[in-house]
Every structure is written in structure tokens, then in C-alpha cells.
Length: 179
Image (cartoon, one colour):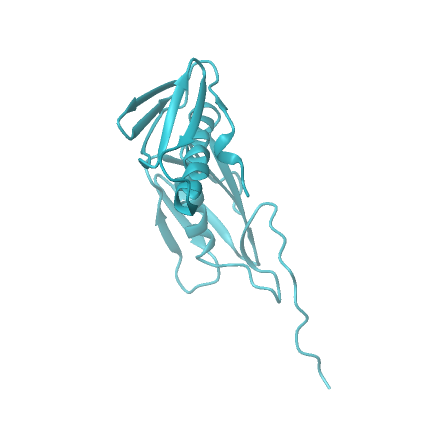
């Protein structure tokens, strides 16, 4: 059984938390995030420490929301202080990425390049033509956009070609053997 919900979140210096009903707003040096939390969990702010406690009958649904609420709040605090970053690598002959304004263009073996619009709350950098850095303050948005870029050409197990996360290990398979 997880005990994540009972862990205290310590607010770093420069982070402000406002709670209006179930909506919590966290403001820090990198920006502001706001999220609505479940009414199954109560948030207690005491100085620079935040605790979460379940409300009512402690069944499986409340237990799940307890840990989830605490983890989501911790990600909000971490995002407005440090931010989140994902790095993608393009592996394959002729595979390359290019950034023009807010459009990410991927040449990954299709007959036409794939163009993706970068969301406004994310920062995308292409330091070289086989590396894509995605960063932002919202962990969910960073992960969703990185997953959508990766889904354009997922890594395949036979040659290892495709778009993969930086430290992702692709389990390779042996191809057919000739007679």
C-alpha cells in the first residue's frame, strides 16, 4: 500500500499557494499553475508545509485520490520552481528535425514531412537535427507533447529506427534467418 499521500510537501522560498475551494494556484519564479482538486481530499497549508488528508470513509477511491492529489500538487510546485524537460533522439538514416517559429518539422522516412504545432506553454529546442528538447512548467503537457512527437515514428525492434526518449532502451529482435 502506498503512503505517498501522507508525505509532507515542503514549499521552497518564492513559491506562493492560494486555495479557493477546490481550485489551487501555485505561483513561482517560472510561472503560475492552477488545478482543481477532488473534494475527497483536504489540503492543509501550514507555513511552508502542505499536507493532504482524506475526507470521510477511507475506501479505495479516496485512497487513490489521496496519493494522486499529493503527487499532482508536488509536480506543480516542482514545475514552477525548476520546470520539466524531455529529450527525444531521432535514430535512422536521413531522420531529422527542424524548428521554424512554432512549427516542428520532422523528416522521419515518410514521403512528406510531418509538421506539428508547438503548444504556447512549452519551449521546444532543436540543438542539432537529431535531438529535440521539450521543456515547460506543466509535467503533463510536457509528457503529452513528447509522447505525440514520439508517436509520429515509434522505435521499431528490428533495426532500432524511430524517435525515442534520450535514455530509452529498445529491446532488439533478431530478424528472419536465411536457409
